[in-house]
Length: 193
Length: 193
DNA sequence: AAGCAATCTAGACAGTGTCCACATTCTGGA
DNA sequence: TCCAGAATGTGGACACTGTCTAGATTGCTT
Image 1: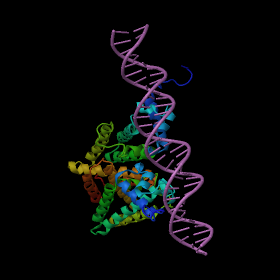
Image 2 (image 1 turned 180 degrees about the vertical axis):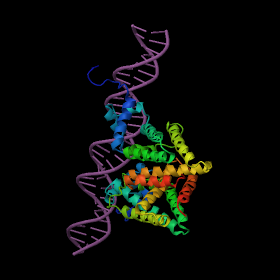
Image 3 (image 1 turned 90 degrees about the vertical axis):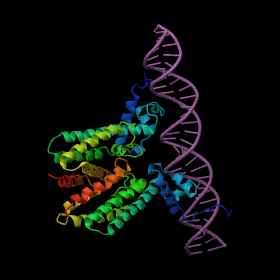
Image 4 (image 1 turned 120 degrees about the vertical axis):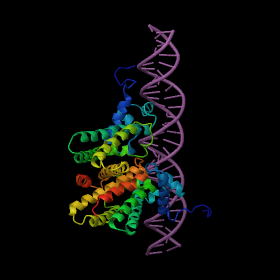
C-alpha cells in the first residue's frame, strides 16, 4: 500500500460525486451527463458510484432535489426582501426565471418527467414542491383575498405557469431575457390593487 | 437475387424511418429513442438511416419540425373555429396544451434546446415559429388595440408563457389536467372586454 | 484482535452512435 | 441499348455508455 497516491477509500465520495456532477451540469445537459465521466472527475473507478447511487437515475434525482432546494431558496429570499405584495410577486417570478437562466440544465432536470414524478413520495422533492406551493399560495391569498379556494388555485396555477413558461422559453432561446420583466409586469398589473 | 424477401432498396426509407420514429416517440422520450431501434422498426440495417439523416440529431430535428407543424395547425384550427376574440384565445390555448398532453414527447422535442435553436435559420422550424407568433400577435392586437408595440409584445410573451408553462407543468405531472381550463379562464378574464 | 460490513477496483457484456469498406440498384447520357 | 457514376443499403469495427459480477482493501464493532 503506497501512501503517495489516492487512498483506497475516498472518504467522502458521495459528496464528491455530486459536486462533480453539478459542475458538469453547468456546461452540459443531463442527457450528456455520464456516470463514468462523473467518476473520472472524482478520480475513482467507473464503478465506485454504484455504491452511493444505485443508478444513474438515482444520481439525477439527487441532483434534481438539490437544485430544487436552491430554486425554492432563491424564491424565498426574493419574497423576504420586502415590498408590497405585487412587488414581492414580481421579485419571486424574476428569481425563478433567473435561476433557470443561470442554471439551465439544473432547472431542466428539476422538471424532467423522466427524473421527477411529483406523485412519488420517496424523494425529498415532495416537501420542496410543497414549500413552493405554500409560497405561491400566500401571495395569491394576499392578492385575491375575496376569491374562493378554487379561484385562488386557478390564479396560482396561472401565475406558476406564466413564470415557468417564461423560464422555459427564455432558456430555450424562444424569448430574449429582456422580455421577462415586461411580461411579468403585465401580470402583476392585472392583479387587483 | 430472390424476389421473395425485401428488396435491396427500400423505396421510401426516409419516410418509413420518420414514421417509425414518430411511433416510438408516442411511447418513449426522445432521449430513449435510438437510431438502431428506428432502423429495426423500418426493417433495414442499423446503418441505412445515415443515408437519409446524417445524424441522430438530424432525425430529431426533422421530427421536431414535423411536430411543430402539427402544433401550429392544431392552434390554427382552434382559432378558425370562430367566436369572439377571448373565446378564440382560450381555444388556442387549450389546443396548445392538448397537443402537449396527447403528444408529450413530441412536444418536449419541439422545445428541446439541444435540438431546436430558434436563431438557426437552416431548419424549417423558423417559418413555423413565425406562423405561431403571427397567430398570437393577431389575437393580442385585437384584445389590446390601444397598447403600443412594446406593450403588445409583453402581452404576447405573457400569454405564450402561460400556455406553454401550463403545458409543461401538466405533462410533467405538477398540475392536473383539470387545472388548465380554470387557469386559462383567469387569463382571458384579465383581458379588457 | 477478529470478523464483518462498507467501500472501491477490475473485468465483462450488451447496447449505442458513428465511421469505413463494400454490395446492390437506379439513372442519365453515349 | 449499355454502361459509368450516383444513390442506396449491408456488414464490420471502434469507442463510449450503463450495469452486472467477482474480488480486493479498509474501517468499525465487539
